[in-house]
Length: 389
Image 1 (cartoon, rainbow, N blue to C red):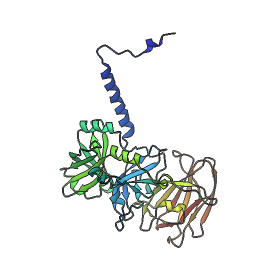
Image 2: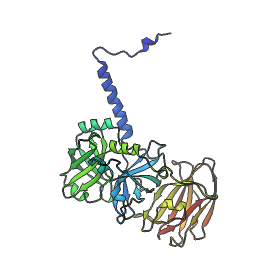
Image 3: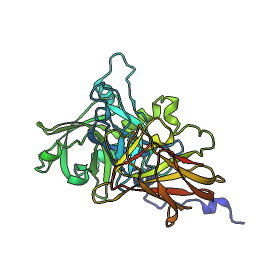
Image 4: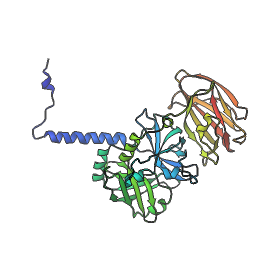
């Protein structure tokens, strides 16, 4: 048997241990950047119609999906209280958040960074994206930002709104000196393309750094002064630290409650529609407490919802689509499709027309499946409940 020491790592002459250590750290940083820097910026729309942006990310706790966005974007203009909001991702899906939570500083004399952070809001995703599918993480480790800021070749902000998608260059004008390692960043811009974009609701956008090989997410835009062309942003490592330390109410960690009667538990993993006034979001279809009110997006004739019924051995006997007097609307045609896995083609099962008495259609399928309800949206779609039996 060959002695173990003969398989030991041999260090070439002239190469110090310190150099090897630096090389190892560089490779570790590269791997960390490649894995963690997948930014997923989504469009935000508050119940009052205010537009902004946010970062959709998966928490380390079983990949649960969250969004961080500036609180002032989603606050009620009447009361100032935070409200659930809609989001639209790059795949044309419409989603809905749970009640957001604001960071509150416990310090009696909060410093500027802590005061700015009070304009952050975190919200769990109720529908539009399934837990475990949010691959982005909330920024990079703190040590990665030091290298990025020292070696960057420029910064830019990307406008994600489909009607005016573009980017513009910004310059780091001031970096705060604070106990958090410079968490607050202030940028300015002289880019001619910036002037109209600065007035289009870019709060929540991501500031990206050009690091030669790639663009890296650095900070979340909190506030913009369109006249002075200045942007105030918080670094993502500081935001991540706040999120990890957050003592969230128990309800924030619970995606959905238990089912009632013989109704099977489900989640809405994708939605494709435009909300209209009075819409409480697709998650309201889980109970009789609200209304889902939808229009087709521009150029489309239908709206759709994709459901995942929970339980490996669950058997779906039927689906029920309900309207109500409180939600209004007229009966609409719908089609139900199914597929066992996300990458398989849809197979049609049945169809019908929504009604106030509940339109029930037989399914009779077992196992983990996705179900898609597609509605004729030649007229607005108003529903009060969807049940899987």
